[in-house]
Length: 156
Image 1: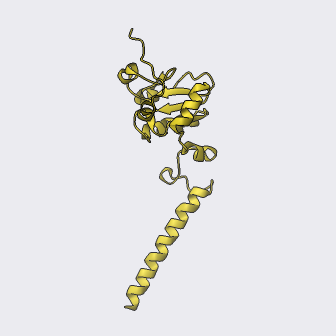
Image 2 (image 1 turned 45 degrees about the vertical axis):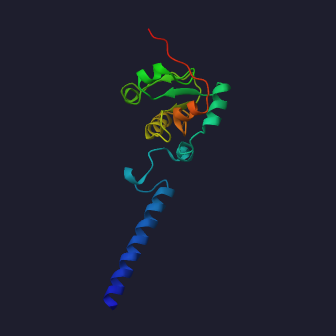
Image 3 (image 1 turned 30 degrees about the vertical axis):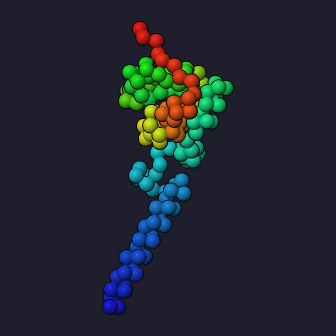
């Protein structure tokens, strides 16, 4: 019985130590460089990258023309409708050709679905390139649900 208690205490102590070590590594910039233990963003932009923009706030930014919207959907979906003035940069093509002309405004990335992982990945890529970037929290679906303006691309 005493040996089971010692083993349980030892296992508990090891688990607590591992958790505290992982937390310290996240908080301390000079921690371990193992990629799985660290967020892929520079320290200064970690918080803001995980604060997505609400649909209402995005609409206000759109009205004031303060951001450049980048649509991650396929060209076919983009042609059907999109946020007026948005640039179409399908997710996979971005990584083949990362240049997006944004006229020096911050970038607002959006996909159709809410909390899109693809949007978060593109925001990270923009931030690594030195651009200010955000993503639309609830996606284009929510933009449509609110009845905000949309436009169709010209068929050429």
